[in-house]
Structures are given as structure tokens and as C-alpha cells.
Length: 174
Length: 166
Image (cartoon, rainbow over all chains, first blue to last red; front, top):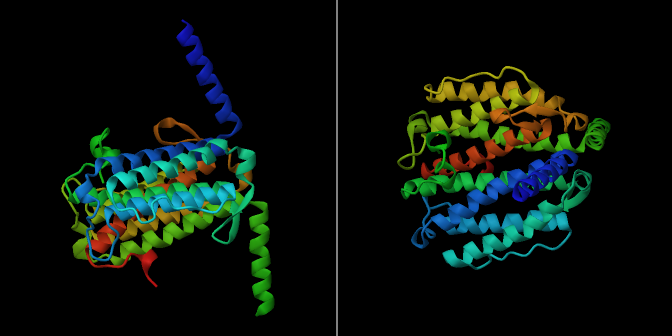
């Protein structure tokens, strides 16, 4: 009974928070989705595939992970008003890149979690342009999804089922 | 000429000031629309059947899926009936036409979106309540994911993806 009461209380607070901040609540939820897909892909792909690339002119899988790290840091640092660091710089091993990705998401988590609908419309400098924090954080979600979309054929070529295709089968087949 | 340019720039700045969120949303939409449309044109007819690995959709089917989701999202955001594309028609001419139709359906919807409507609630996938803004941005996000996949297909066929062309 106590568990049920606490659960209902938490759910109510969640609904209230979402009701007060629908825009920032949605961007956060979409960020969580892309974070989940990228993190699971980085974990699922074996070390020996990190150096693989499907064509000579493209990034390796590991470089795609590093690219995601770099842009999460650029986007979230922009919203925080801090200079961006790149924890993936010079890293090539799976262990290092998985750790760098986690580090980038830990950094971004705080940014998304602190966003409210009021602060979402505040401007920040993003690559020399003033734009709303919401736009920068949505850009990051789009870019994460684009990067994940690029990783999908890499995984398929190597016979790996992409994480987003695991639970729902053909509905999410890429 | 300079005066006209100033008026156009002034108008754009005013539109941005009044509707910053939806102006930015439109920028993201227009960028991915251009990229998807060019990618559909870029791939050769013969390679619309290309799939990079077992279990993955061919290029044509992936592009068609992207067009269908984009159109569906626009329908959900407005309550309008979205065009339905025959998922079996994955040849280049049919897919290019579907991509065009999806964006033609969506263009006026993104163009008409205002910040005042941003938090209006609509029914999205699975009957879930979402804001109009979040729903339309979901279209941009999904199209970016589809484009990311297609960019790898293009590279595998020695094509330069539109966003990487100089």
C-alpha cells in the first residue's frame, strides 16, 4: 500500500511537471530515446568492428561514436555557456569511446534536466549564432538520431541487429 | 536592390522575433527537406533496391518509410488526413513522387505554425498526447534519422550525400 501511494505520488509529480513544462519535457524525453539508442549501439558493437567503415570515404564506427560525443558536448556546452571539451579526442578503443559517450551524456543530462519552458526560450550562442536553448537541444536530438541512423547500416552489414529493432521486430526494421 | 534586401532581412528578423521557436523549427524542417529530396534524386534507379546487409530495408523502402512518417506526423499535428503511400512501390519514380507529396503536404503546416500554437495538445503515435511543436519536431528528428541511414547507403554506392557536397 505504501509502495502504491509513493508510486502514485511520483507519477502525479511527473504529470504535474510535464503539464507545467510540456516543451522542455518533450525534448528531454526525445533526448533520452536517442541517448538510449546510441549508448546501446556503442555497447553492442564489438571492439573489432569499431575500426570498420562501409566505404573508404566515411567515418569508422568508432569515429561515429566520437562524432556523437563531440556534438553532444558542443550543443550542451553552448546551452550552459561553457567552452566545449571533447572527451573522445584521440580515443579509438571501444572502452575509451564508450566511456567518453557516457561522460558526454552525463554532462548533457544536467542540461536537459534543468531546462524549463521558461528557460527554453532564452538565447544562447550556438556556433556563432544566437538561438533558443530549445532549438539547440532539439538540434542535438536530431543530430543524435542522424548519427544513430548512420550507424544502423554499419551494424546490419556486420550482422548486428540495431538496438532500436530489438523489441519491436519489423516495425522498427532499418 | 539593397533596399529590397534590407526589407527582406527586416521582415525575417520580425518573424523570428515574434515566433522564435517555430521559426527555428521551420529552419530545421527546410534543411532536412532539402537533404531528403536531394538524396532521393541522387541515388540511381537501379540502386533503389540496394540494402547494405541482411535485415535492413533497401534504399527505396527506407526513403518511402521516411516520407510516410513525415507525412503522418504532419497529419497528427493538425488533424488533417495525411497521404498514404503504397509501401510496395519502392522504385525511384514512385518514391521520389512520395517524398515530394509528403513535403508538399507538410510545407503549409510548418509554414503556419506559430509559437502561440506550440503547446497546443494533439494526438500523436499511439494516441499519445503531445504538443503540436513536439510532434512537428519529431518529424524533423525522424527524417534526420532516415537521412543518416540513407547517407551511409549513398556512401556505400560511392555517392556523396547532399549535406556533404560542396
